[in-house]
Image 1 (spheres, rainbow, N blue to C red):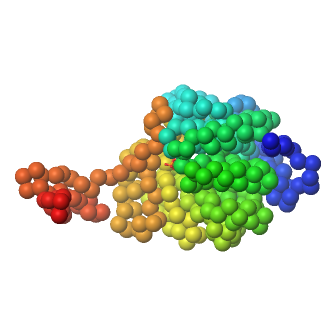
Image 2 (image 1 turned 30 degrees about the vertical axis):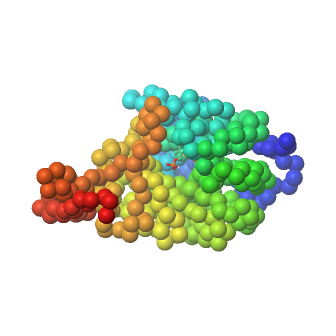
Image 3 (image 1 turned 180 degrees about the horizontal axis):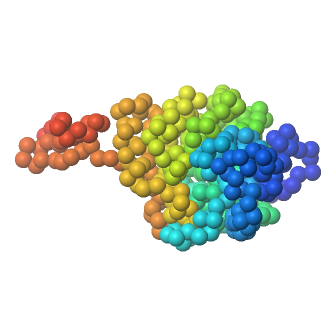
Length: 386
Ligand SMILES: *Cc1c(COP(=O)(O)O)cnc(C)c1O
Ligand code: SF4
């Protein structure tokens, strides 16, 4: 049995927990952070209107608002398209979505044998361990779930979930997700990772977190020791824009890597925030310089309240096409769509293969330039037995 999981510990709070305990949670705090005068002379003047106050309250009732002082300090209030502010400011569109009505188009709840466990693919499970995040992103595809307050479902279902994973030998990987798994205390994380590591049929333990983006102080020596002890652990970060890659992030990534952590990144393609070749290219190159491998670029999901963040699929394909051949291969993420109705993730690719000619048994290709005047050929192997 485990005790005290997910509950408030009586012990003294660690430094990261202290810093974490002063996030900005109200519109007033947000306005105070920048100062009334500055906001009044900025493109975000609407923040101090009565109308916005109403919108904020209304949206807030449905989807929680919270942002760390650290993350807000990256914002530029003079830039009407500030990528930080656009990711965190509550917007009327979240409760008046004209197109997306389904809070759970990926059918996560239907693929959940135990509360918190999503078992969609035969070989991998995703374990939703916490409702909490340091910052609540407005585009979140788990909006329906994150920010539920005061629930200790994690400790209640913990033993059942470990038992489920242990008794299904075809499960190769466990992904800790949420909410943010790094919002759990070290002791809880250590116990979870250690219990998972004791299951012989698991090949991989992954942690999906946005905390390194929104609150990098969470990466401490103590946490890194836990990761080092249970080598290898994979951490998937979530950076959407190059301004999120700061000096402190660089130091924390270095600490993780020196502790033997495999670090990959996923990005969500977001309208008006990062949906351009220039930004995605810069982001990926900077990730590489930080020692992070870009893993996935996601088309945003059809989740109710997020239509205004959605880009066209074509836009994503075009960005990937432009990157291909003009950037280091290890800096190019796979462009993914998570199919609605629970279809799961599939990679979206530009096709370089034009056709196969049966007569002379040859394939014809475009190269990365995709210039129809330059065609390349590969002959099919004639005899497979040789
Ligand atoms: C995204 C996801 C995974 C992991 O998919 P990979 O392609 O292996 O990164 C696993 N389970 C669920 C439910 C997911 O949504
Ligand atoms: S950190 Fe992740 S889970 Fe939390 S609100 Fe942002 S996108 Fe959603």
